Length: 182
Image (cartoon, rainbow, N blue to C red; front, side, top):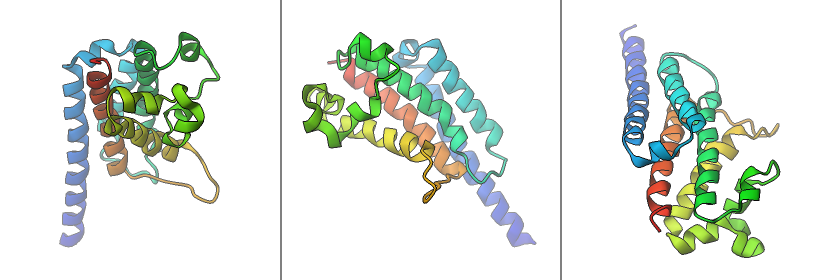
């Protein structure tokens, strides 16, 4: 019985630590210039995601993908605005219901897209690392979490959901600081 209780307490402490890391990143973001840059909708999504973090830290679900969703959605909106402001996409791309950001972010389509490749533009105007970081969280935190494949239903636990959410906020902060300063 004592082993079960201590295992439970250790798990709860671990989950609390991940929720705290996200909360700290959220507080850093709120005090930065990027917070003013974010739209009201993007801020609301982030606030709701932080609320979910606090509300879910003591729950037990088979899959916490839904917890990542507000951060992924805010990230996509942020990137579209950032890429419009940096000239990586046009206003028509920004307002289009058909523009697929992931396609233009993909390092696998750099040569096919040529100068329209956002990945190549970031690499050229900033660094390979910045382009990779944006693509990495896009694929790990959005594509791999939200696409459904019958042969590979991917579930994530609270820890991974917290880490992905925190990574979204980190990349928002880094990309804002890096790409708007060029």
